[in-house]
Image (tube, rainbow, N blue to C red; front, top):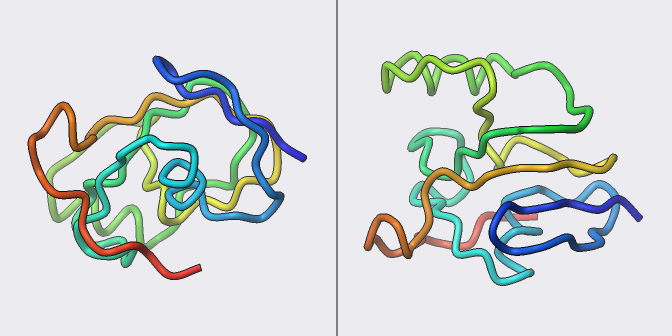
Length: 107
Protein backbone atom coordinates (compact mmCIF):
# COMPACT_ATOMS: atom_id res chain seq x y z
CA UNK A 1 0.00 0.00 0.00
CA UNK A 2 1.25 3.49 -0.77
CA UNK A 3 2.08 5.88 2.05
CA UNK A 4 1.29 9.55 2.26
CA UNK A 5 3.29 11.83 4.48
CA UNK A 6 1.25 14.86 5.47
CA UNK A 7 3.32 17.69 6.95
CA UNK A 8 2.24 18.29 10.52
CA UNK A 9 0.22 15.06 10.69
CA UNK A 10 2.50 12.08 10.06
CA UNK A 11 2.79 9.21 7.60
CA UNK A 12 -0.11 6.91 6.76
CA UNK A 13 -0.77 3.89 4.57
CA UNK A 14 -3.50 4.47 2.02
CA UNK A 15 -5.46 2.06 -0.15
CA UNK A 16 -4.04 2.16 -3.65
CA UNK A 17 -6.23 4.12 -6.06
CA UNK A 18 -8.06 6.08 -3.36
CA UNK A 19 -8.74 9.76 -4.00
CA UNK A 20 -6.25 11.83 -2.03
CA UNK A 21 -8.99 14.13 -0.66
CA UNK A 22 -10.80 11.11 0.84
CA UNK A 23 -7.59 9.61 2.20
CA UNK A 24 -6.78 12.90 3.93
CA UNK A 25 -10.24 13.16 5.43
CA UNK A 26 -10.18 9.52 6.57
CA UNK A 27 -6.89 9.98 8.45
CA UNK A 28 -8.18 13.05 10.25
CA UNK A 29 -6.87 15.92 8.13
CA UNK A 30 -9.74 18.37 7.80
CA UNK A 31 -8.93 19.34 4.21
CA UNK A 32 -11.52 21.57 2.61
CA UNK A 33 -13.59 20.32 -0.31
CA UNK A 34 -16.31 22.95 -0.52
CA UNK A 35 -17.57 21.87 -3.97
CA UNK A 36 -17.81 18.22 -2.99
CA UNK A 37 -14.81 17.08 -5.00
CA UNK A 38 -15.90 18.47 -8.37
CA UNK A 39 -12.70 20.44 -9.13
CA UNK A 40 -14.49 23.80 -9.06
CA UNK A 41 -13.66 25.52 -5.77
CA UNK A 42 -9.90 24.72 -5.47
CA UNK A 43 -10.20 24.52 -1.66
CA UNK A 44 -8.86 20.94 -1.61
CA UNK A 45 -5.52 22.02 -3.03
CA UNK A 46 -2.33 20.53 -1.71
CA UNK A 47 1.31 21.25 -2.33
CA UNK A 48 3.03 18.11 -3.61
CA UNK A 49 6.52 18.05 -2.12
CA UNK A 50 7.58 14.54 -3.18
CA UNK A 51 6.14 11.69 -5.16
CA UNK A 52 4.97 10.66 -8.58
CA UNK A 53 1.53 11.78 -9.70
CA UNK A 54 0.05 12.20 -13.13
CA UNK A 55 0.39 15.52 -14.90
CA UNK A 56 -2.09 18.19 -13.98
CA UNK A 57 -5.45 17.60 -15.63
CA UNK A 58 -7.30 20.01 -17.88
CA UNK A 59 -10.01 20.26 -15.22
CA UNK A 60 -7.41 21.36 -12.65
CA UNK A 61 -5.81 23.82 -15.06
CA UNK A 62 -9.19 25.41 -15.72
CA UNK A 63 -10.06 25.61 -12.01
CA UNK A 64 -6.72 27.24 -11.16
CA UNK A 65 -7.01 29.62 -14.12
CA UNK A 66 -10.50 30.73 -13.06
CA UNK A 67 -9.24 31.43 -9.51
CA UNK A 68 -6.02 33.07 -10.78
CA UNK A 69 -3.85 30.54 -8.93
CA UNK A 70 -0.43 29.92 -10.42
CA UNK A 71 1.89 27.45 -8.70
CA UNK A 72 3.54 24.44 -10.33
CA UNK A 73 3.44 22.39 -7.14
CA UNK A 74 -0.25 22.81 -6.32
CA UNK A 75 -2.75 20.13 -7.20
CA UNK A 76 -6.38 19.44 -6.36
CA UNK A 77 -6.57 16.49 -4.00
CA UNK A 78 -9.99 15.57 -5.40
CA UNK A 79 -8.30 14.83 -8.75
CA UNK A 80 -5.39 12.71 -7.47
CA UNK A 81 -5.55 8.95 -7.03
CA UNK A 82 -2.92 7.69 -4.60
CA UNK A 83 -0.88 5.05 -6.41
CA UNK A 84 2.57 5.75 -4.99
CA UNK A 85 4.18 7.32 -1.93
CA UNK A 86 3.56 11.05 -1.61
CA UNK A 87 4.63 13.88 0.66
CA UNK A 88 2.16 16.74 0.72
CA UNK A 89 1.20 19.90 2.55
CA UNK A 90 -2.52 20.67 2.75
CA UNK A 91 -3.09 24.31 1.81
CA UNK A 92 -6.60 24.90 3.17
CA UNK A 93 -7.98 23.12 6.22
CA UNK A 94 -10.80 23.77 8.63
CA UNK A 95 -8.23 24.86 11.22
CA UNK A 96 -6.40 27.45 9.12
CA UNK A 97 -9.46 28.81 7.32
CA UNK A 98 -12.29 28.59 9.85
CA UNK A 99 -14.53 27.24 7.08
CA UNK A 100 -16.68 24.13 7.06
CA UNK A 101 -14.95 21.46 4.92
CA UNK A 102 -17.98 20.92 2.67
CA UNK A 103 -19.77 17.78 1.48
CA UNK A 104 -17.74 14.58 1.37
CA UNK A 105 -16.60 13.92 -2.19
CA UNK A 106 -17.75 10.77 -3.98
CA UNK A 107 -15.44 7.81 -4.27
